[in-house]
Length: 217
Image 1 (cartoon, one colour):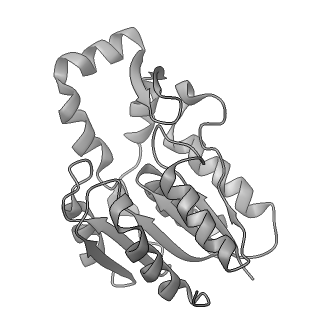
Image 2 (cartoon, one colour):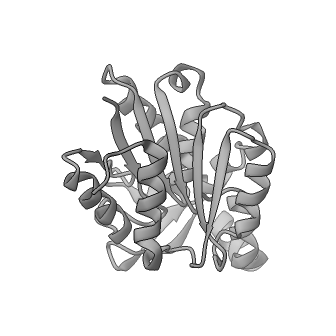
């Protein structure tokens, strides 16, 4: 039996509503959903590379295969973990919830040039962390590290289900549409929701359950 890993989103945590709802669904089937804390107690030095390394190490630490479920930046992380040559063979399937494809292209314009320049010159940007419910600093290395990743290079042929809201104003559904169109081993389900997807939790579970072949509740 594979292990099931859930990767939470940016400025979130294992305690997020979406993560805990998914964990409860798995528990009802007698399955454990592992939700690592991608903040690692040091959100300030968060990078995509650090997340990829953390999850890759976790996967390599146990003998069974893995099913990766990722939300937003956690979804992008899952896709890049699956791209690692030493890891791909250990991953059975991917479930990506509003994955943050084209992340910098969509996020940086919202900051604007002045705020981005201030971040670069001062070294940190104050970011609201949803779990901590306060603003915390994030180092500019988060940007320079992410610039080293080109989503066009994601080509690991691992079956993937993508669930994305048509009203997502954080990560446009067009990113997932383009991603799926170029990768026939992926399937996109469009849902009438926003980036949080909290109002379509039942739909997410139904599609996830079917895709993973889990027992019916």
